[in-house]
Length: 365
Image (cartoon, rainbow, N blue to C red; front, side, top):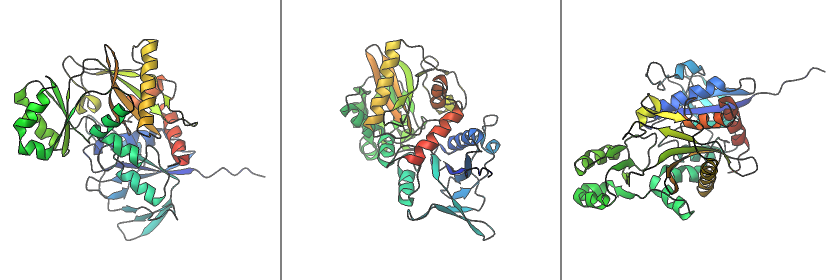
């Protein structure tokens, strides 16, 4: 009898979104579509426009590539994608501009969304309600890690060292900026001002003197109503990629190091548009340092209740590692630190995509 090939697993790649990281999400989706094993997986690209419309898009990776510094965006092509309203069905309903309505059954969703309305637990909640399996961290871990203030508190409670910080609400800054300035000045200078719930260094500023604080706070408040202010931590910027283990034990990659220009910092342009930085994978560390940060990464992942993947960013100081952030949907373009760390550890970009899809299919939430 002839052998009947199994039907491919249908993967809905969800990208774009309403956050300021819309374009990077598109680049990441293109990278995934370029390497995904099309013999095993049928891809359904769902692009979310900047206005929040869910649309059916092209699965041609070239449409989502970074070209000459120009970043792609999700166009509104008139299609609309509706998710199931209960776990009784796994079918997406597609409305087309000509009035036609079609359905697509999906097996797993790969949400490649950064920042608010994607990485913060909101889309994860939508998928939970719809009853659709998905790749990556769940609602709680996503929301927790997205809020830098809350994440620091949880990590500190778990016995991990974190950088000191002050949290400032917009209403506090508006009511009495002088009092806020006095409260953050105790950290010394320079300071780093960050939106509490944004990613990819959007709205982040280095402040070298008191006169620069107001502009930095105003910029951060453009992205969030809550801001954290941190002192400069003197140390090397070292990151480790974490991947959920099939046996429940987190797997960690060899670490990578970010080397930036003197007195610089790793901002959005440096990450995605080129700059004076260098990404060293694996990082030039001793065996003991490598073991230490891998342990820190696994502990941080477990502290937030991680699933699927995360990148744990640390500073290597004279007296050990200090956790800076946990990113539950880290940069995932082919040139990003997360896949590069795994490549250095013997897991290719394509293999990583496959492993994450398979983890998502069987995840127990």
